[in-house]
Length: 596
Image 1 (cartoon, rainbow, N blue to C red):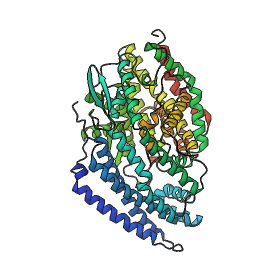
Image 2 (cartoon, rainbow, N blue to C red):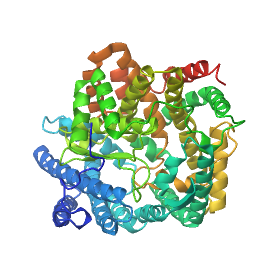
Image 3 (cartoon, rainbow, N blue to C red):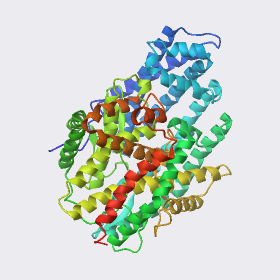
């Protein structure tokens, strides 16, 4: 199968960051947003609205929200495909202003909802014309009661554009300009941070070690600027939370992910119980690589040789085949994404690091971003991001307010899709060596979710505790990160990555605080869903769609109770799910017993 590896953004707004159509789109969106904000602000404190008026207002709000998401997705894609696109950087500033206005709009709408008496609120939410978005409105009403008066929250939104969010944009600019000078096979070149990160999984340890050394050095040059950005992002959050009267830095991320602290604690406790088994895996991997102990840059290194790297077309065919075995509808979606160029996969300089899937709500499309090199890990990433796209696809016709599912549940569909493809590859392995390599690649992802993500969580938790006392230097951030990594990895590595706090984009995102634990939650929750799919077979495909469609209209625990019959605060649930993961480790240890 011969496919384009560059996505099509022209279908949305021709001309990229110079698109006249997009400029007009932003002008119209700005005008409509301001009109609705003015209308909502004009509601006097004592004035109520009839249900029909609420319906008209909510329809208008969902319309501008969908259009704003379209604009945000477009500019995000422009800058991801070319970090040096100055026009895109300017557009991001304009969209940030609109997002602040949108937050102001919801600040006032939420206040109006919070003012309703319990009886009036239930009357509104039970109206057939509004009932479909009742969950979102009830949630917003409850959350509004924990915030500052709407006039103050509106000022916060306005000031955050050139304050809070600007620090995140500064980081994006700095990271986009970093070049990593390397000398590989006698050839000197400069890699982007994304390209360098990919080479940390190179099969040649000399290459991995060299690139890692240069990668750390490159980030060290930008460390002071990154430290300033991180300090001020955290300082903003701490100050805002204190003014709202919040006593926990985790209050907002827990609410955003629709879980409670006891659920998060139960999950991490189960993960910690599994770590000794992961250490055995890391030790075995070191033996297979001929090392006494793994270093950070060895953790993702391949073991042995898997089958020849796949071309992009071969990867597409393989993924489509495996998706079709679970659900023809899921395969049809993926086929459409490939054929209509929804995917940016080309390996070239100038792209940002990492991968993502973003939704264009108005167009009812998605776009997937990654850098494909044919290795099993990037085939898995492609499947992962297609899983995100399928999640958005099955929700495309739902009201916009309930298409907004939390990050921890967003990881369900992606990791589920990844598991389908990974297991198929292992089963179809032609030799034991290939099976070991593919199983090891799968197990390495459990290290990422159980150890790497946990290290991020530990770092951020400790960082915020220290930041509340004052600014933290780059060197102290290194120390905090080193301590967190040793704790999370049970001190099982030889060399760590102290500048990880600078190199990881997730610490600098301003839309989702503590952008780490949702990955582990989603990984484990998807394993539970996957186990249910294996148990029930093809008939589960439609139930799976129903589960995904509910992710925007109920809490995580209600979702688990309805579709899996479990309670997320139950330690036994997480322990059983973790056991599904550690079985892969046991299989890997057994397969490699004679090769160590």
